Image (cartoon, rainbow, N blue to C red; front, side, top):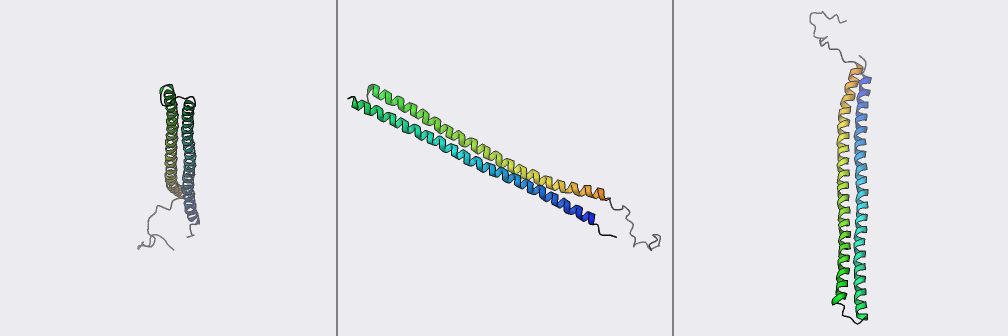
Length: 171
């Protein structure tokens, strides 16, 4: 009986295909992880920009307050009374609202980044899991198809060495 090279080659090919499918799934997961890292960096950059906007607003508010106080003193008025005080409160209120808006923007940017990062990581895990399952099932299907194409071994289970009466005509 000849060595079943076709069966060996079929098994090796099935293993190779399963390994390639699994490696493709791992590569897909790595791509999602890399994308998540890029999103993390971009989100952090946007957060910093929003924070800098808040700092800018505070500096502008401080400058406006300084101007109000300086003008009041220059005109011989008391800066913490009457219309001067109202102007300062109005400036502070406006500055606080703008600062709070910048802080809210920073938080929104951070939360959106976190959500996108989690989604990308979940997609990476799902890609790996799906690829692993595809590799396993593909391996089985390839073996079954090859087994069917190569032809099944004979279903005759007669043991040729166990025929004591000599009816098998071996020989």
